[in-house]
Length: 318
Image: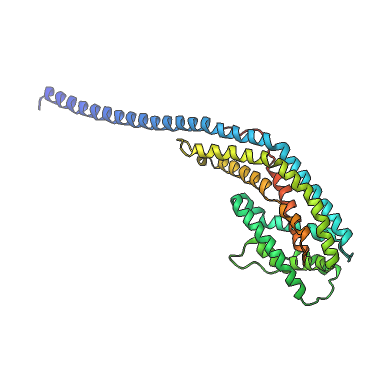
């Protein structure tokens, strides 16, 4: 092979190498451009979604602002009536050391809410209302349990404290938390203690006088219901409209959960009530304590729901 042929061959190989390298560079450039385009499209979609979601965040803040005073008012009303019931049961029930009757009553009211509190964070309003109706039925059953219970030895101070901190055996699988609470030996002991301090006459007096007090809460709830329902309807209408839009609110789990929580709270504050308690005025009630304890649980729950849902009106930013 002559020198000229060698040079020509080397030049040809170099040309092929340069061509292959150019092709590789072109392919890499194309891949980078394609990836950049995908990232740009994703960023553009995310920005569009953020602008879209901001409208719903602003709406949530508007609803919170519009209902803030009503929430505070119903919380104050529920707390005030609950406090008056605490002192009422102290006045009506026979004293029995070591604990005041008001402490037994308030403890049961609080325990019912604490048992159901985790459920309030994700269940729909209708489901929660059904669960409270179940609490009422179970409290009525407790009266029969108390009347057929065998007498027990009086608890000493230390044993009494230990009993209040012990809620009996763990609930069997499948039991609802509030039903497990109401079936526990500790709750039954507290209920029985308060029940033993009331006879038929004092129980009837307790119920009648509590109705007058509870009616103040019912009146406040009736007056504020339109505010709560209006806020709930605004959020529900917005979510209904969103179902046909490109960007769904559920894509933002934080925003979606806050809207659902606000709707649930507004629904409970307007619908979890005690309006039917007044009907017991004209009926002979064999045992008034279940209705009294249920009233305490509802008042405690509404006050806590109103308090916890009165968030800052500052909207979320995306």
